[in-house]
Amino acid sequence: QVDLVESGGGAVNPGGSLELSCKMTRGVFTIHDMGWYRQPPGKERELVAEITYDRRTNVVESVKDRFIISRDNAKNTAYLKMDNLKPEDTALYYCYAISTITNGPRYWGQGTQVSVSA
Figure 1 (cartoon, helix red, strand yellow):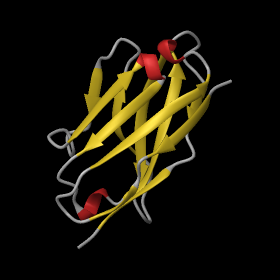
Figure 2 (tube, rainbow, N blue to C red; figure 1 turned 180 degrees about the horizontal axis):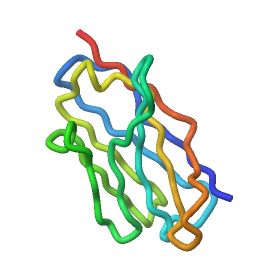
Figure 3 (cartoon, rainbow, N blue to C red; figure 1 turned 180 degrees about the vertical axis):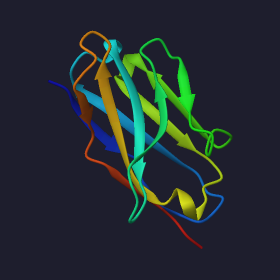
């Protein structure tokens, strides 16, 4: 069983920055790949970024020059740093964890809202 607690969302102006955090409060962080999906209003959930247990990263093309994913194993926490935010980044962001041992299930955080508007 894995528990994830997200924080760091909020409302910003275009061009602003936010950093999302996803802390694993139960589970073995070091054996989990981590990542974020987002769900814009009225749209499907989409992958944003992912980081493996050994820190290989993948950030989707639409945000890769603005978002950075990282992890701190000592703090059992993954981070999504988002710069130069745009209105189209407005969404509910969900972090996830998936074990590299069992390859499933995917555990989800509670979601955090990011709103970008002038």
